[in-house]
Length: 506
Image 1: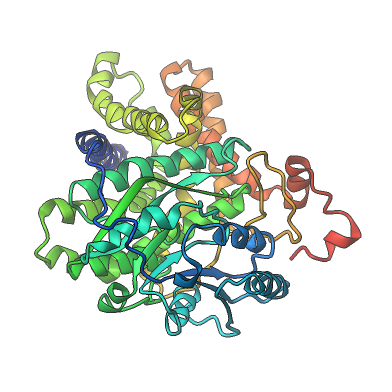
Image 2 (image 1 turned 30 degrees about the vertical axis):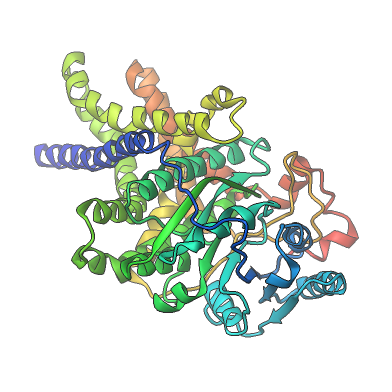
């Protein structure tokens, strides 16, 4: 029995120590950001620099948003004779007809638009982009996912940075069309803000590598070729290519003030699918490139930032173990004087919970549209709970990335929602439920029982932490299991029970 208690406590404090290292790095990112906040990148090119640009729009079954995307792309200010638009469509549904019709409409208005459809999805998005490059006319390529709304000045702001011949790619900052829609979208927005406001800015301006985010950005075609091209042995082809390019001596430019709005997933299963893909893909990039990065001649600062970025999702495996042993460890430590608990647990609390609050809370002050940033602070506990609830989903993704060769790209369905949550979606794309959801529900029951017991035995200090774990697992599991047709009808005023809509649900 004593051996079991010792094992649990050693595991408990070991996990908290590792998580605290990442918490300390989170605080370091804040310091680095504010140290370089005013080091705004200045482009070498001026108004006379007008290279030919190809805009690539890789889509797959996106009939809800393809027309909106094209409407925004053609509004970007750039000479028509220097602009080409490629719709790279791998769709297997009505999107094909919708996309073709939109392309024909704008081609008739004088735009240089080509529609390229593949029936073989080899390489998924990376394969589609590579296929488009074979016939692209531009020396630069801009890329937008189907749920993004490129701004009119995007090319005017991004292209001048390519006058520097060492610049391989330019990345813009993501904004969120439907941030205010629900608790889920509020939390997602804050999570992404932390990454795009602090991480990208701090890494880029401190001369470390940072990753291209796959959309709302541009590439130099010759840099893509020099780095080895779009490869599809990972499902985060964007991070893979950007690291390979930077290892070859190319540079990226991050423009925090080049803000491009996009649609956030409004359903838990779609959100989990997106997060799963990113975590799994980064694990695949670790397998592929981490040894090369460590053996390179890059600075220790660069190597460490690559490590912290790519391995961050590995912490979810530790979170799963922590979720299992936290209750037993609290029981074992019952009766420990408060001042000993404060001394042992205080640093862990600061480096984990407090660092999360500061990091994501301050990101709201730094976003471009920050008029009501203080009102968003109330969502930080929800962010922590959601992070805990995602642990099983993300741990599974990391393990798949490390130990399987599955490269299937599962895209996140888009519904075409606006900032008010309204949608004109024609098809209700659904994400299959995962068996992992029932494990999440089991953890929710486990922690609900722990909360009741803690209240019964008056362990009041434990209740907030136990409740955080319960709420995270309960939210993720219950909303994952909820019938999606009912959710859409209640939340977005869709009447999917009509005969016209029902047959479209897949």
